[in-house]
Image (cartoon, rainbow, N blue to C red; front, side):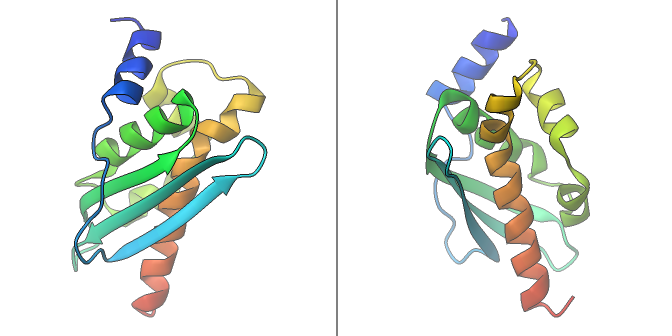
Length: 126
């Protein structure tokens, strides 16, 4: 499977899409330039590990595939890893070169993840 097929598969058959009953954290991020919107819900353990990560949203194939790939990738990882992730990490997970205009589409989900972690930490007094 080449990378374009890989992304199309995640777009057509998203993993970790849906809602969480009683999430520990949630956030919504939109890209006003193109209209992509991603909502993220996380269940985070007391030790700071992401037990469950889910997303919903509307947007282009890159935005939706990126959200699916990121939720799958960060499930089981620490909130610290989410906070350290950047555009390079997203590009590596997507496995394709992205034009600067499309990079914002790929990063909407990461921004939402970081917002959710930040909200979680504020609630816990960190």
